[in-house]
Image 1 (tube, rainbow, N blue to C red):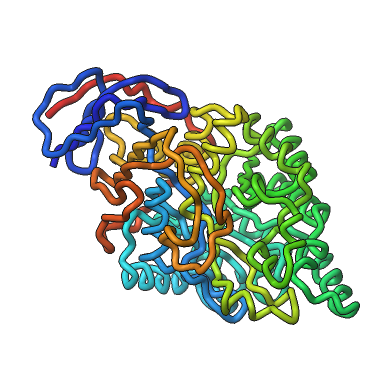
Image 2: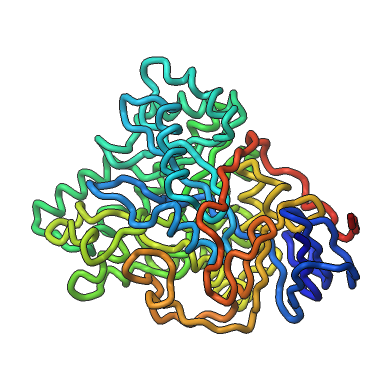
Length: 474
């Protein structure tokens, strides 16, 4: 099937021009001015942006946590992603202690097949245990296209890995061309602060923030960077929220270390005033790390503009307010940590970043699509608009206004963290490998059409996006 996108403003990480885009099957085959061919479907993109589909490298679908499981599965979660202009997600198989890496990966492949995703899905591997020669399984992960680890420095007795495990994982990752992702918070400090708060009768959700201070994150970020430097391995800090942490990353990068970091919309648009909401409403904003004091937001935006923050992901980890969040109504430490965000990332970053002049359109594409593709072994198949790339494309109307609300969201979670916020700019058509999966906010893709996508080994930042003004029509 041939699809022709006419007259749109093509935006990549480095390009900005008016052109037609011709898709044949699943692939972009031509980009040029005024392509005249017979097509099965023509999309008029006049006055709109033509963007590469978003890549969200940090989502948690069907993740077990705190005695429950995130409410979105691979069906609802990937459908929600399409509505927000995301066409590839990377999820996290979670290794239970005592179980093997291959065993864990096989289990998640079964979940993925059973849920029938709508868009392409990759996997990272959450590592909790490398005892009993489990390191020998690492090469097999790479062969199966799982080329990144994630380790936790918090959540003792569940997810937290000790320094020995972290360092061994980093060494193995470096030797096998993998990227290590770090949840960097000092879990020991946090556990002491949580115990003290509860002993003092401080049980409400506001104390989630006070017991996870920014300096506990910054200390762990510094430690993770040091271990990665000793291991001579690249490292990627997930959901960075604090300016002190960002400074450590910036210093490491300036010194030549392969150090990368992401932040998330919740840290760009929420501050710690959300924990003053009445009753139990603040539980909706119990994600980890917590929202910080407002001054951190300006630092994060500057970090994005300066490339010290390489990616904006979502850390989509949704738990319903009505029942799951209320597991901690008498004890904030039992509130499942996480929040929704998979379908609003592009709109928020455009409205709060591009329209305000904080970042350019090219930079928006870079942090939402191109750099994730490069860091996680998907480029140039994904992450750009170029001849030969997958036809993962978003037609985006920068003038289209939308109010974010639970009433129209696709995710199964029962609240919208950004309820009532009006944004300017919204996807009108979303294509995944050449097939329309969402149109005017209505998901039209078929469950099960998504594929598991094997990722290449981490090679560091690759050269710039290929030139895309050639034409090849077959």
